Length: 87
View 1 (cartoon, rainbow, N blue to C red):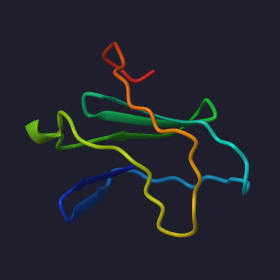
View 2 (view 1 turned 120 degrees about the vertical axis):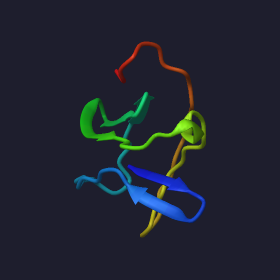
View 3 (view 1 turned 135 degrees about the vertical axis):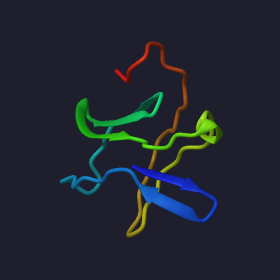
View 4 (view 1 turned 60 degrees about the horizontal axis):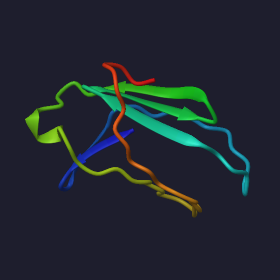
């Protein structure tokens, strides 16, 4: 999970993921306050806490970051969640 502002990039957390080529995966990234979670196929694989969320990060952008190889995506959806904590 990477936080980036302009050219400054900060890795909040990272984890290895065993995957199969050409297999479908459902990924869900949830943000609540300064906490970010990532689930893949319903399993929580990463949790990060932004130590400095600052007022400038109350909104922003999200996307896929692929530094080697390629990735196909069927959809990318951004929606509001309710409650204080990611699901």
